[in-house]
Image (cartoon, rainbow, N blue to C red):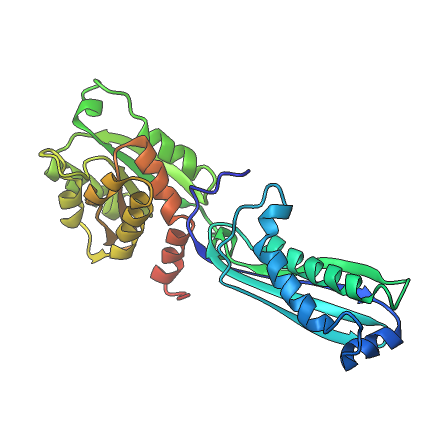
Length: 302
C-alpha cells in the first residue's frame, strides 16, 4: 500500500458511470417492477452502496475509506440502463475507486436479476466521470518561483557542534514546489539577531517566504517565536494551528511547540520545529495551501 500518513484530510468527491445493455422488453420490466427476482433498482442501489463501502475488500491496494456519502442514480434508454454513482469523504486519499466499485456492484446485481430474461446482457463503459479534492485542487502557480530563505536556529549548529538536518530536509521538500531557496543560513538562539535577520530578508532582500527551523519549544534558549513576533505585522494563526494539529495527530509532544507565523509587508515568515521529523511533517501540513496566500496578498483574491 501507499503510505498516506503524511497527507492531510481534504473533501474528496468522485462520480463514475456504467451501462447495462439489454433488450427494450427487459428495460420495460425493470421500470414496471415485474422482474421475478424483485425490484431491480432498489437491489442495485443497495448493492452499489455496499460495494463502495467494501471497496478495500476487493482492491488490494485501496485503503479503508470512511465514506461520508454514497448515492446511485439510473437513467433509461430504449435498450440500456445507465448507472451513475457518487461518493464523498473527508479523507487523505481519493474516492474514485469507491465510485467505480459502486457502479460495478450495482450492475452485477442487475445482471444477476435480469439474466433469466435476457441471454445477451452486456456490462459496458464503466469509467470515472469526475473527481475533486486532494492537493492538486489547491495548487497555485507563479510566473516566477518564490524567493525563499531557510534559517536554522540553533546554538550548537551555529557553533559547529551539531550537523543541521532539519534545514536540509526543508530544502529537499521545497525542490518540488514553485520555490527557489536563495538563502540558507544558521543563526544562534539570540532573539535580537534573529529579528534583525528576518527584517533584512523581508525589507532589503526581497524574500517572499522565510522558514525558520528550531527554537520553538519551551526551553530557556527557545526564542524564535518571540523574535518572529517582533517582526511580523499581520499574524497568520491558522498556519501555526495547522502545523500543531498535524503534528499532534502524530505525537503528543507537538502541542509543546510555539510556532509563530505571519506577514511582514509582502513576506511570509513561518516557524517550524527544530527536529527533522517535525520540520518535514510541518511543511507537509501547510503545502500547497500556503502558496495561495501570495495571490491573495497581491490583490487577486481567491
